[in-house]
Length: 379
Image (tube, rainbow, N blue to C red; front, side, top):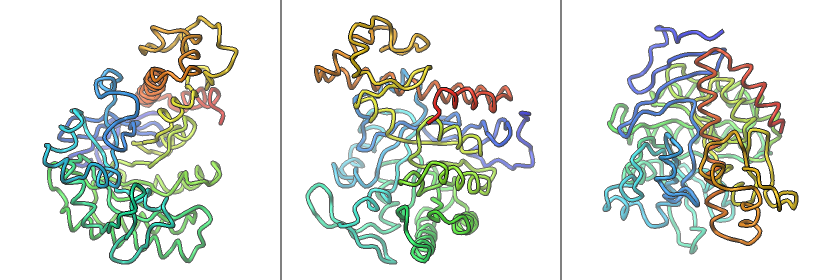
């Protein structure tokens, strides 16, 4: 049954639990650029732009918060340049909250171009080979220059298959880096929030240790990092089920880089509040679209003369205005409009998905909502 959050949960001044249903949570996150209703999905705007859509499109879709990336924005156009132009909100004309990732995952994805030490990470730019050094303190300063509402600290994300000894060493390093980040941005400094990133690879005991150690450092929120990096879905869900409930009850919980509908449901089911992923926009550009009846590939010949809307249950501009036949034509013809219309639809689908999930939690029927959606999206 759903019930109101207990007063004993001692909500922080920036996060308020409104209702819980099983382990699923309905809450509000307060930032200087507005209130975020959770659970929430954050569209990814890596370099200050959600691909193929404009900020006014995102506002029309009721996007609550978007994500940027400190690594990419530091390299191009430069965080100091953005700071001179009033910060990322002003630079990209986005009035709502922004979370910026530290770039730890991007550094992880460049194994031949980086060297990790106690001090930080030395790496070469994937753009031009120039050398850079990220320390925990520098990553905080980059995000302060960007004016991020939510700042993520430098961490190391280990690959699936990394051995236990290396994973343990890496997890301990991430904790030490987190402590330095916390010292560089003292608790309560307004208007920014600093989240911790728990790690631990694919060992449940290391995941638990990471949560316990970081939980004592008074962060404003807690993320689960290092999942969805090539491991089987069952393993990811198992670790998620073991880890999420350990995170502080009265702080927001964020599952990084995970966005398939079935994974969103699994995360919400164990009390995760925030998600991000490139999936909606990347799949849109590949012609894969999400509907109330499951995924479709708009490239298929079967849609060449289909005059029906993409999804009759969807109220987005794409579905109100165009047929599957037209959307297929745009995609096959290589028209740039296909990217925009497909992205608008997929993002609208994910915004609606989370809105319906919030409503289900409020009404105490998250379990039935989850089953209904898993029947539509079995994979």
